[in-house]
Length: 252
Ligand code: 13P
Image 1 (cartoon, rainbow, N blue to C red):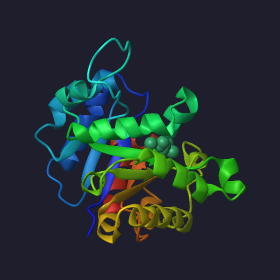
Image 2: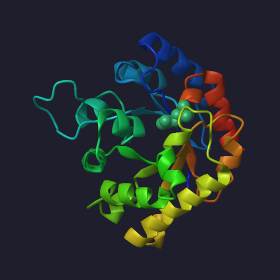
Image 3: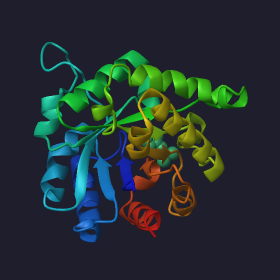
Image 4: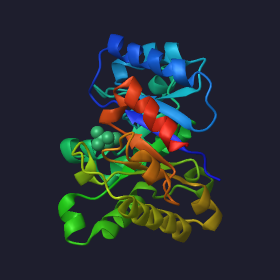
């Protein structure tokens, strides 16, 4: 049985004070919570302060990106040790906004996944197709390429710790969610990929999250699909009430 994991990606929203306020609100409900892993990924500037709030609770901290070098002259970048120091246990890697807006490649994603694993944190590796790719029938080809390159040279003992987030780009921030069937079909493809690349046991253990306009109203149906193990939530994770409802509805 795979443990559900619901993560909130706050993107470039919230000051330190606003972040603390959401963290405190969530902590009231999820101080102790055993039915799912609950992760919040505030902006870098708020990580440490949010960690102080949630450290004794069930809520875990994640970062939205990382750089693969240990230290050095890399102006503007954040190292693995800096994230660990701030209390992060998860790191989102290869989000489509990083790929599309900032030109991140599958090779960059691979380096980031490896460094996150090396430092004992858990990577949430995002994959997903653009609208035109879905429309021209190349969704699986795109997923195959992103998965092959993103997980290159990662042994199965480490791969079981990687969380894959399937985020169809056309569903992100658009209000247009993939249907539960579309999500299941892609998640099944990802699990089959893991079985082909590793083995059945590894594939059965890897957790696959869906992301793209997840709301309290659609989470239950998505979670009812066999290969959907959780969600990576953007907009609806910025509000205590809606994120709380998403987590609650996910495990009902
Ligand atoms: P939305 O939930 O706002 O569509 O964003 C999804 C996402 O990109 C999470 O990483």
